[in-house]
Image 1 (cartoon, helix red, strand yellow):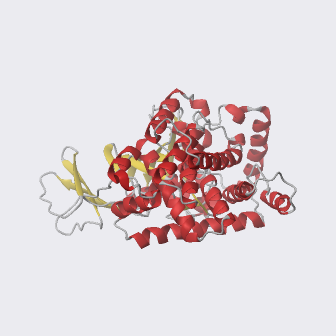
Image 2: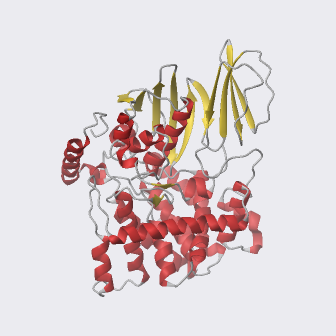
Length: 517
């Protein structure tokens, strides 16, 4: 497994869609599947295990949209994504989606049977949270493809001599033939031998993997040992980490995050101006909030009111298929940037200061992603909202010049406050209570940052809080982990909203792909 990257796993991808673990990850899986078929697909069978999350959520939470876009070769922020089902049909690709009983251990498992006139392949992959994914097998052969390498797959007659430079070479014995899986920073040429077949799968992650890559630490405890008594600010430790992970300069790391901050600020402006989308639970609410806030008609919340406004605007952009940044997921995309940008603007701070705060948050996210997950399908909303609150608390400490240890304390207290949080999206859309949970995560982060600045004792180290969240998730019923089978999702009001949205979508679709139902 490659080490977590802030820009791969934690703050990103830049995307459209309601859910990163559904839409962005599915798109990356689709891109790899397209490469496996040399870009030529005439038919695809998509199978979801009955006990997983996807049979109940694939149509409404962006899996179909993302997967279809990936099969068409699109990027995660492509403006055509909302119409990907129609585009897939227009491309002449026949689609079937079926629910099967296969006992897949991961709730976000995609089984894709792909065909064209020459060949057929079975690709099995999982979405691991926050837009990250892994291809588990191809044609029954176990693989590990996470999209960080140029992957060259070469089928050869057994006994063929093969010489090449690569980061990693895995040989799979297939009886009379052998499959070489070659991971490198460029595709390997097959000119030196006579392969039976060659497939080239391009990277789908912004920060590539490489041979002999080492990071200075991967947990909070390791970071504290590494830094010792120097008490280096978290944002600087984040730069040190990401420089090692991605082979960047310090300036490159900061500039990458400034670019993300600018995307987020633009999205906030778009949200405040007003958004609309037909398949949507909530309308434009941030505009009215802004009017009342500016008129002094709300309770005096200081910077917190601006944070609530920005969180709402970002969630409305997400729900209208606008461009957002998964931070750490699309469902929890608003708490961290809303808190950082709202507070920084109230303090008249620059985009570079915002970027440093986001980097500190990213480092906390590294510790969470390394030890556990961001996927609500695995851990409930504590994995998404809890992580976002923890990250935002450390970011706010950074904005006010707090210490390394205060940032860690704030992160620990914020996560502690979110343990047990379920994922129960109303009408099977990632809008509500997701908006309220993002607001709660941001508000929690502000409170915990102030508590840490006043040297409140978190009692439990951050790594142990993350482990505790994982233990809680194991005891959490499947119904409360993003399946729309429990909590608010099954109230009569929620089911009625879902029914009306389903009828509306079916009437306006007309592709016959089945993804509306």
